[in-house]
Image (cartoon, rainbow, N blue to C red):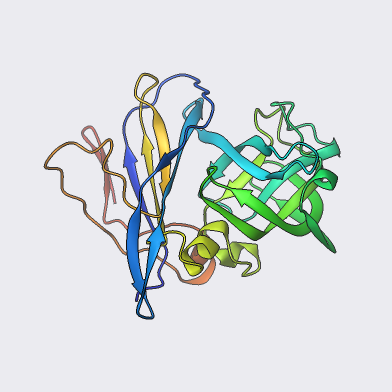
Length: 253
């Protein structure tokens, strides 16, 4: 059984700024493991678009211990990082433009009593490392996912979400298993992959975790795969080698 982490990106032109609440779609599959047949699901989350640069949707950070309701918060789905984090109540966070904070004290969050500092190409922050139940959708969740409750940040320039869902390899998170790693390991999803479909405003963008989504694929289209470059610093990102790039009549090689 392959343990590689594949990503498949289906891209169409995306225009404007678009935010919709997460919707839930469930696909049942069956995978045979150690002679047992497991019932599987894949989660589909609608994505909003910010200036054609980043895409975001809502995931759940535990349930409120008082009401039993899932704490939904908008996060950026980021292929260039690996950690999952959300702004906590009381966070000195200039980058949380959504105004949504999660009170970890009212959830199943268990602290590791360890502070983590994160640095991105633009912006940085620090927070408390711990585990809690993370809901990709209401039906697709993992009970002991490592994540960070962000307590302060700087450099994110106002933002419009409450956190970041890192989609890259666990190597970028000190080899801490990602949500997709764990959903695959416990048999919740059939394949350790995700599909991102980037569409224009009238044709909803979405991310599908656990299977290849054919929702927005033109009939008869053929998928082509390339090997990812996982050497040296590239192991933290999804990169691959190209012979040349052509834009109009201009070619660079």
